Length: 355
Image (tube, rainbow, N blue to C red; front, side):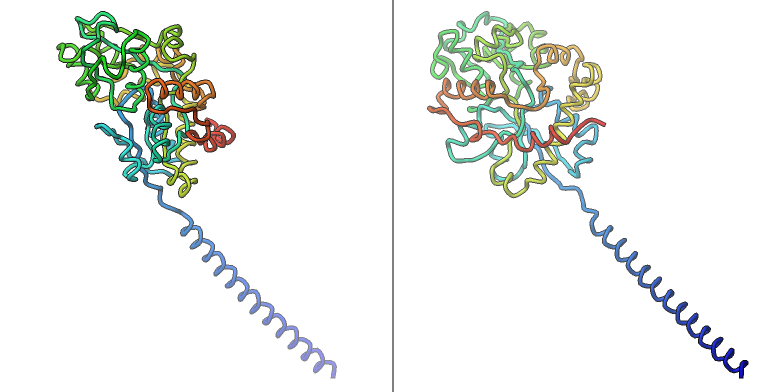
């Protein structure tokens, strides 16, 4: 009798053990299945970089942050696949408004005029704190007053160089609209034309200025001098080189805007934490045929041309509006928020640091 009870108990225990073993195996199968699903989900979450095209009105050291962002992989870190495009011609903004490019490095003075015309775009950040721009005369041109009745190369209408030329000519007592004839030329073509007296004045900045001086041309106005800067522009700080995006693109793609601003902001910080030789070394490959001299970058650093944090200050903004009114491109003041969206920059300033 005892043997039968024991046998029954052993059988029960055996069945329970088998059941337990069977249950564990089923759970493991479920766990393995769940892990496989998780792995598949992770693979699905890996997204391709967002492809964008970034335009520039001309190649300049003052746009240094965009080249550095590419060279050091900051765009890639933000999940962006960026193509840089130099756009020549009378209207680089046409590519922006037709969505051929998503961001444009351009002159700030164009923005109030564009918005008054209903084209609707915003400055997202500034690349410079002061204008490092000059008007350079041909070998026979000794002063701004000599330009009456002459030909001036000052980029396209509505651009920063054109606004700068207007202010400098006005300061010299000339009518900037009627006393000179404007032409639009590629910057290095204008240097050659200037040296050969085909034109009598051209704007210049960075290494282009050194190049023109080396061709026996004469510096007529140079805003690297703080007194001249304030006299011509009415302010000690002036942000003329900015990043633009259309209102429509900003509304539809805020995440991309944030990623782009983050990358450029990181490059701005990099510039502030490195010396002229290091900056010039990174920039040189982007200036084929002429390179970038460390002395040019040092001068820009000394003159506080590079913006330390991307901010377009209230005083710089007010100076932009004055420039546009002087040029006749707008007739009334405009609020900061009508032309600037600094929300992405402020977030970058809060979140982004150099590792």
